[in-house]
Length: 166
Image (cartoon, rainbow, N blue to C red):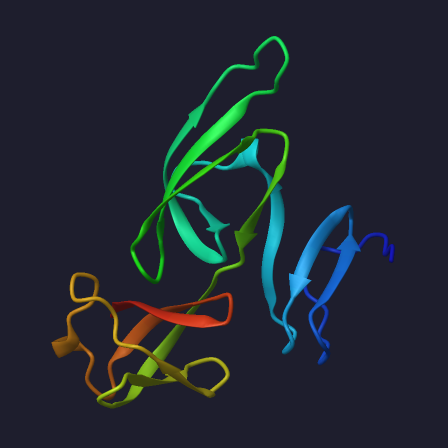
């Protein structure tokens, strides 16, 4: 499928997992039409950026690139920490091969209710309700998360993470 002069955006479709090629870039779209990830060369990744390792979105904390050898290509060793589980992951791949970068949807919302299992958030743009798990203790204090509090949350790969309370 070739579409010319189209920006790197998602198609709004309600179907199964769809993969299409737009402007020579492969975009993964989930069943509700949200962009999930986009491909990037490993050599373009930077510290502080995000990538998907073992199906988990991770924040890159260290990159070490080796020089090309006599018979091989340059390799990159990437160390990253999971966004949701805070686990350290390592990744070694040639620089010219591709890696998946998650598309992070940064939004603002308001805490609607606090349940024993999590928090219910109302998005301030679309007014839809979203259920989110409690954030880790070190990121956002639970005492700040009371009904009516404005928060910033991220939607990554169909999952929700509360980043901070305003």
